[in-house]
Length: 107
Image 1 (spheres, rainbow, N blue to C red):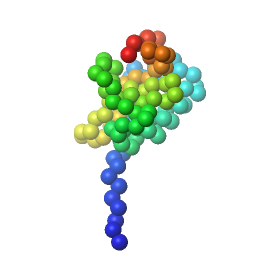
Image 2: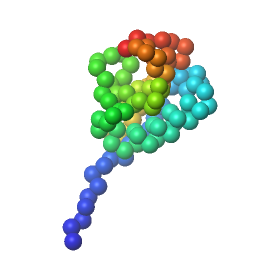
Image 3: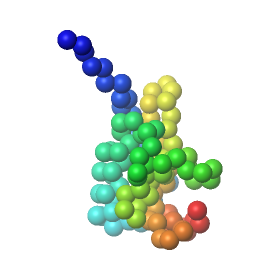
């Protein structure tokens, strides 16, 4: 019998200090969707591109985006010294703009 090795890597999740105000700008339901989505989709293999998780074109916000309906989570990945996903911003997508906290950013 051959043992199957699971090469998937678990990542710790960190929220950058500005994300606290970003989350406070959301409703309680939206906050729950974001926190649950981050845990579900970013704690294992966050570098794997999926329908809702994509690398972004160069921008000042973050290298990766997680789409949760009209909510957006912008994050970076640090592999050393331990694997960590750093959530840098959380916002609401509205057409070609994203509202992050009290700011509107055109992407």
